[in-house]
Image (cartoon, rainbow, N blue to C red; front, side, top):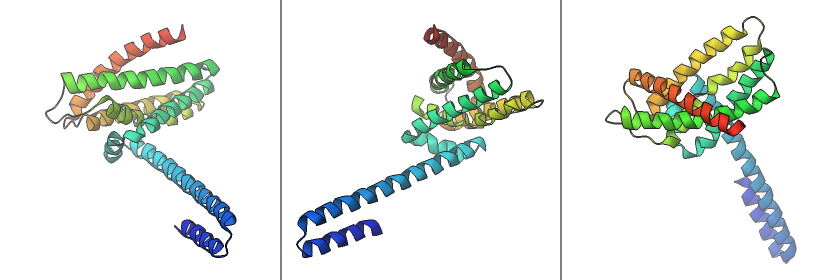
Length: 220
């Protein structure tokens, strides 16, 4: 970019004048400044990509689910979605007078355990018990798609609205279930949505049992 070319030109001018030490310091400073700007630009891009992915996942955009399925670097983003959704649910519960600081911590732990266990159980059911001929998937792919499927859960923060809070939470829960079905269908390369629904239902029951057992073990 222009920053690198400018640094190189300044360095060359200093060398022609015989100022070797000055030119070295100038080059190091310029390259460091350019590197910081580049890192800042990348962080902004990653944040924009993360936000766009969450919005797309909440809109049930199958292309977003396909994208995060194949992007191995999106696992940390998926974890971020799970934690943000848990935080939003905790705030909504506090607004309804049913939660406190302890519920935030327990909720975050439960969300992470549930996320991992559901991905693992779904992987076993979807690839071993109820696969379609074209099904190819691993646990990481399911963790990423199921993580981003939690995106509508960020709206649970509005569950604290007086009067309509419980209704809002109910609608969001339905939205989450639909997103889960889309996530599973895309990750397992299913043609049948009904098969994806069946895998989600069985997986949810088994993952809930596993999560409760693990949560009791962690918190006792």
